[in-house]
Image (cartoon, rainbow, N blue to C red; front, side):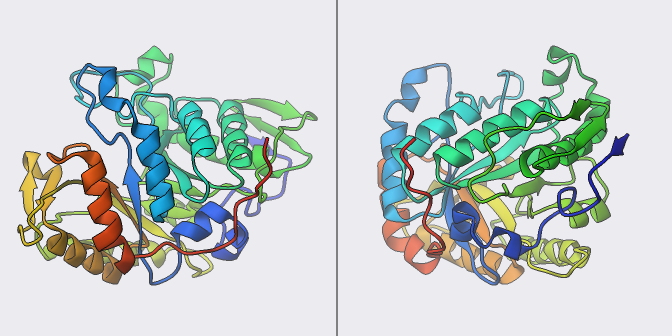
Length: 346
């Protein structure tokens, strides 16, 4: 593999000043602070699409309430054995739809599977959504954890790490370079230019877990890091998470700020004093809002900059949970103002 463009931030993680004008990034991230996002779907798909009816209206209310981000997952094929279809809709098409229904909220993927798709298609979809939303796209990206999807794409599951790293490199060159060439195992590109370009020149790439890369690679190439939260029902989990975040940040070459993101599937009890209780083998946390506030404060102290909360397993109506989060939790972890999105009406 060779690249005719010079080695630069096109190929590696960018410092926070590189995203100073990015509305989505700035709404979500600031050193020492934590903001809140909501993961979709708001209700768990169990074979009936009707469960998703009205979801975009609730996303619009999440935007108006002042949450920092709304998150979608990338699940190309539903594997009943895996037991989770994500938000069902294609993430890129759905984010474009949500871009038209919202004004300020960041639009985030958690996570786009970079190993399954060609970087040209990824770059075209990403820059389109970013332009349509006025610069609100933040891409959490991953190498893929569902083995059934890879043979369906004609790809080797065992090679996903190599393909992921190459896709990240090619993606960045495609969206940022005005001219130049790419020659890699994924294709040759010399002369034509990819359009549109991102609204602010860059799109943040948050690496999910290790993506089968070395810790040093993640430190050098991630614009941010998205990981599981460790245990959330006790105090040991946030302490372990703090150690993990500290070790990652020590590997950032320039020592500059890179945001950390974590998430939790939440069953928010109507009893504000309900203790933090793990459900479904620790996959879901049942708690009252006081326990949630304590957890979020511990995450912030650990170095987490954004918490994405999924409420699809909650017993209470989604609108009711969103209202309580907006009124009782969000004021303690407000979104950052940052630059306004581009208001062009495409």
